[in-house]
Image (cartoon, rainbow, N blue to C red):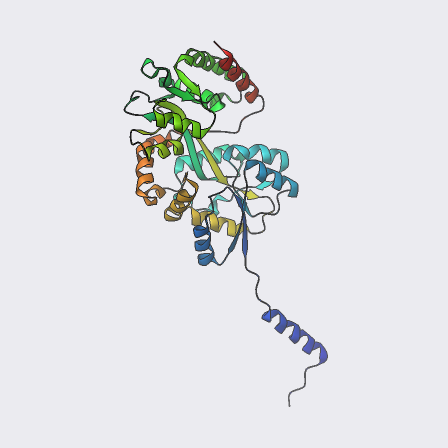
Length: 357
């Protein structure tokens, strides 16, 4: 005859049954990212495939650093700062943890972008970021009116006099430096050398002032200038050129011979992530070409996913492939972190160009 359970055993059994009856809490990935980088359709696909719920918080570089600094790297599992905003934040605030590249299918990524991002996000010998969404500035050209414009310094040619526009901002200084045979990024660690390069660029921009219809400050204003025919060639961003191309096939974005200037928004791990495994699953999922194309359709910019351009809509695919043959992608000059003191040098150069007669 079986002995009846004692009181202690009954209590343990009741507690066990109660735990079994409780619903399991769904696994969650807390993602802090830019608008458009985690569209609803992609989130739904990921949740259905993995069973992991994605909680999206939209932010920007300043917001990401501020939130992680306040929590000492807690509160999120995956964030997306720009590649040139990681090393300084890590050095100052210790808010990230190194990336385990063995957990990522890097074969899905454009090799040159992966290497550029690894280089610019390496701190004390460890990599803190891998590439996701990218974009460039280069040339927006009306090919019927300014077919000779193939590099930044071509904006100073006599054939486009009075029909040129660019911003008085650091990308213009950097672009002209590369077009003049210099490597300003390689001089970042040498202020004297960088100053000499900027002096050379300053002289060129002053001599080019007569060619400039106006220095644009807002994207809509520039688009209207090109649309109206007042400007035939400009230094601007890729998505802006493709936007005008939708209306006027003579106008498009051209990657300069010396290289378009590129930015990359990365994937980075907060130091106190609670779900690192889910973060790696998300990275590998969204870097699949077909999924990455969905993000491009949402964000308006391409990703570092290899071959994803083949899956975007036909118009954007044609625009991208015309502007960026593979050699031009590999020739992009990716912005590295800016050392202290260089912005002051650049600011003085821009002020002198602006005030020159």
